[in-house]
Length: 136
Image 1 (cartoon, helix red, strand yellow):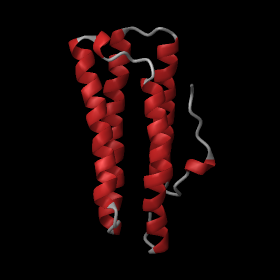
Image 2: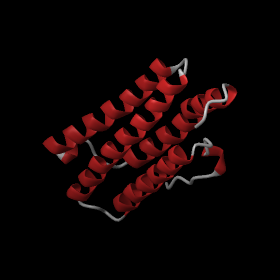
Image 3: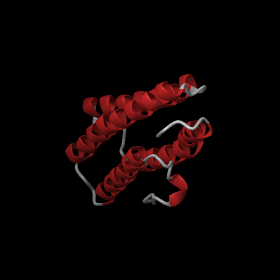
């Protein structure tokens, strides 16, 4: 199932919205590769890309949290760390043996996580920034 970017996911921060849209596209490409029976090497390469890009994106958000003195920074960062640990765990399992961590359902998990995270955590951050008249 592909995920679709809509205005409901727009935070109002051009860089973060661009990064979110790129993540939507990457997850959809991952799902399409799985639907077309991509080989283990291709699946693992997509996981490596997502791992790197998500890490860069989280760095952007965490900088904004620090700069704006976001009160829920600790909890928000824990959410980021949980996802990174899951992706790293899955990637490491697949390196041992792709059968240990089948890719089916992974794109859906990532898509669901991203959409829920944006709506709950990222919107809270950007609402905080707007309420305190902090530039985004």
